[in-house]
Length: 403
Ligand code: FAD
Ligand code: UDP
Image 1 (cartoon, protein in one colour):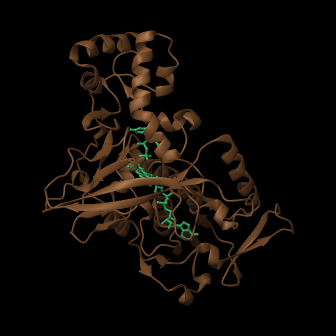
Image 2 (image 1 turned 90 degrees about the horizontal axis):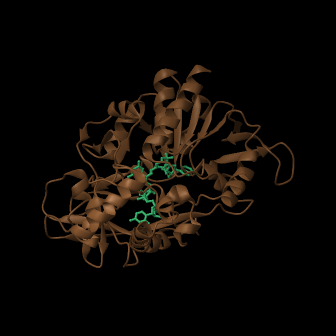
Image 3 (image 1 turned 60 degrees about the horizontal axis):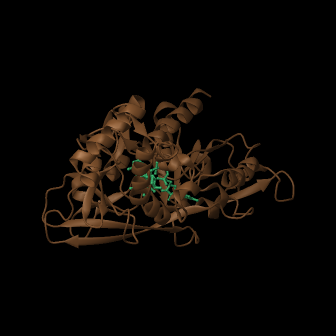
């Protein structure tokens, strides 16, 4: 990978342009470079590669994540095998505790949480009831649990709803759990189990040296050039088939030349069109870091504050990375509406029918441009984990490499 200044770039030297260097953009760039011998230009608006997976050492020399805690987990062997090429792995299985006014309880809420909350004896009867109703080792969504009419189950459901989901969801999304798409809270079920892990996937872990070196290795190919701090919106000239706000895109000019080879776009779709139909709603985050003069400040990788505080969760990176050093850095996450593209980052699409219809309006504008490919959590306006993005990027690469 060579870093290039955009002003020196000759666009006719490239067989593909990729916008964004997160997993979506980087996997496609690597695949095209390697399998098709294509010369690929990546445009990245941040000052570094790796998208939201970017990690670096802070002033206390502690490896931290700059855009939220990232733990790799998947059942998708192809996605796992693929990134195995670019990193060694550290064995790590993420555990999360909820802080209930100072008492820690495993999340997802499970048999162990039940004993902490209700005491062993009372918990035993409730666990039996859960097993009889849903089966042992079963995952039950909070919605499924709440819709059951049994009085004893209703008590568990109310407890979990009030103490795990309600306040956390209000902080994270600005609305109650009933108002978010059911797929969102379903990510964190009630688990009729003693398994305290946050994820049960077959493959889990952290890149041994961190995510940024993983991306450096992935992009280390002589056919890949990258321009950092270049916003595609400012260098793409969009040509439309006719006048009017619904006119479809006809071509994209870069440096005055119509670029007819593949353009892979992984940024927010509305921003490409200068939000002409209004901005797509997202949630953004602020991160506050604190460094302490002790080995560990918390008992596990993440503590969720489900009934108190104005931040949602605290992540202590040393648990994730296994770094052995003096001191520890923690990060608090504060969620809010995404309002200013100049100063904020869109982290979470807000999944619902209205927003999907809004997104479709933008999608329609791209329907006639057959060298334009949208992929990624932002470009597709979806709530994807890393492995899903890697898988989708490999599918798109197969398609592009076979044409
Ligand atoms: P991104 O990583 O967002 O990359 C997009 C890139 O495009 C960025 O570098 C951006 O700067 C660039 N870009 C955007 N617009 C433009 C433009 N106009 N011009 C140039 N460049 C542009 N997934 C997991 O599997 N496990 C986790 O533990 C996990 N934790 C997460 C925690 C948080 C707080 C968040 C927000 C997400 C988490 N995820 C996790 C999801 C993970 O971040 C995404 O799946 C992944 O980042 C998607 O990759 P991407 O390439 O689509 O997007
Ligand atoms: N959630 C919650 N309490 C928790 C954990 C999760 O209410 O202790 C809900 C909340 O709505 C959250 C969603 O479940 O946004 C998904 O949680 P997850 O940990 O998967 O979120 P992410 O890591 O993607 O931010």
